Length: 264
Image 1 (cartoon, rainbow, N blue to C red):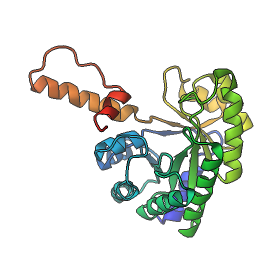
Image 2 (cartoon, rainbow, N blue to C red):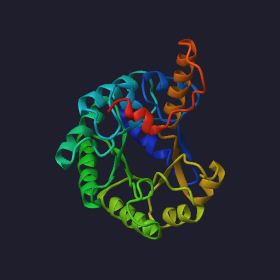
Image 3 (cartoon, rainbow, N blue to C red):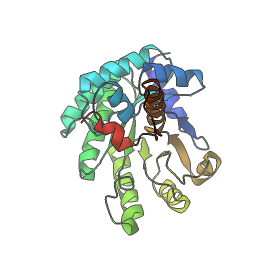
Image 4 (spheres, rainbow, N blue to C red):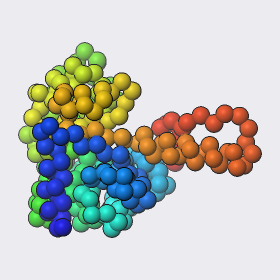
C-alpha cells in the first residue's frame, strides 16, 4: 500500500457514524503491540514518545529526533500513522512546515498541531504550511487541529464553548481536517461543537467522558488515549522496580507532572 493509499484509508476512518479509537503509542514496541490488538491506525502521544527518547513533553523534541522515531514506527506497521507534532516544535510557520515535511518523509499520513497559549492565527498559518508539506509529497495529509481552550483553561469557563467553536471554524478555513478538543467531557458541549464545526471531532480520555456509543451519538468521530496508557505503563514499571529494590510502602500511580519532571 502506498503512502497516498494509507492517507486515504486514514481519512476514511473518520467517516460519519464511525468512532476511531486510538490507543496512543510512544515507541516501536507499543505501536506494534497496539496493532496486534486490532488498532485500525497508529497515533503517537507526544508526552510518551518524548519521555521514551529522554525529553520532556512540551515542544522540546528536536524535529529530526521525532522524525527518526516516526520512521521506526512506520517500519514495523502497515497501518496509517499519525504523529503528534505538538505545536510543530517551532513558533515560525515556515519552520513548522519543514518539521511536517520530515514527518511525511518518515511515513506519517496525519499529524496533530496544537494552539496552546499562542494566538489562533498562528496555528492557522501552521496548518497551511503542514498541508503544503503533504501536497509536496503527493497526498492529502490529515491535519488534526488541537485547541487547548478546555485543557488549559484559555478563557473563562462561560466562554469556552464559544471560543472553541470560533477556533474550530478558523482552523477549518485554514485547511484542517479534524478538530481535537482535549479536556472536554460535557455531553451538551460536545454535541454543540460537533454540530457547529464541520470537521471530525476528536476527544481525549478524561474522567467523566461518555462511553463510546454515546460519543458516536453526540457526533464524535475519534477518541484518543493521550498519554494515559504510557503513564500507566511507567507506573507499573516503577511499582515493579521499587518492589525489586526492596522499597517499602505504597507506590501510587505516576501523574503527568511527575513523569514530565523527570526530564526537566
